[in-house]
Length: 354
Image (tube, rainbow, N blue to C red; front, top):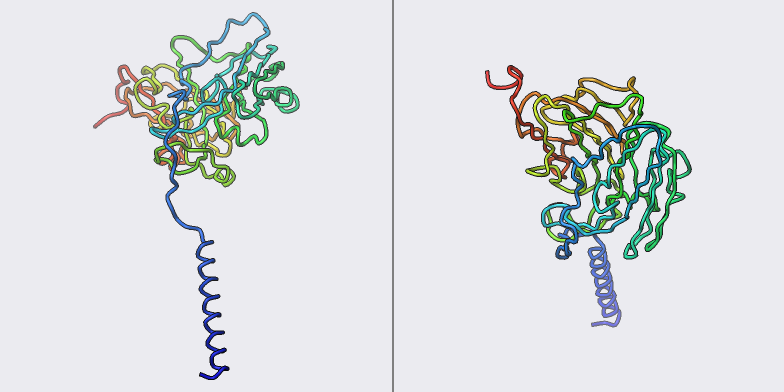
């Protein structure tokens, strides 16, 4: 073999080796489709994160504006978001949503935030009922192991969202830090009493590592949140929170049902609907001014960080009334499904076989 031919062969071998190395490196960098392996579920320190929908504070007898005080504990807790699947929630008072607050227009309201020493973050509160910078957030940002209080006057009636507003705000909300505050007008009160059933329901979207239905502990997924692609869209903090005995909403035939409904977010809008019912009255976007009410509404649109009050009287007994976000993949695939059970004697001629 001549020296020139030997050099040519060695050069060709070197080129082939470089090509193979380049292709191998490219393949290594290509994204791969693989199942995310989740760690085992952590110890559930609170088995049920869901706020009981019937836990609505009673209206107080009104004798004029009062000084009203609430203490909210920013509790971080690991609990089930679905059967066999856990998530680390950040909460107000250990539930999602946090407690419903109820005051009268004109009240002087003091809010105290208590952030336990074992918290991993600072927390705060922005109440949409507050008129002032940050809605309270600038005065309430509280480090772990500390507490802070601030006050505001409830000047506008309506149903308002509150949420944590410590940066990054969307991340705190995506961990479950939201709730509703009702400011009632003492001059034109909504009827309450033994013939009215009031419920508290808040929708939220949750973003996690892994997929819904995969057992184990699901950490928060920042990338999914930023792309607005939640694994879970649920009522009151978890899948199935409003389904089945002891959890479903319950009412009697001809009894007025009132639902205080909100959307904590952080991202999605809700098309709130009850399958098998028509809302007799809707107070859109939480406004309590009588001129804003709508009648005979099938589905009401509730924005992120917004609310609505819906009222209706069931006329037919049954267990298959379902609360849904009528963007139905959220109800069927992601958990935005609740149940209403109606008992009693149905009104004749309304529904049935011919």
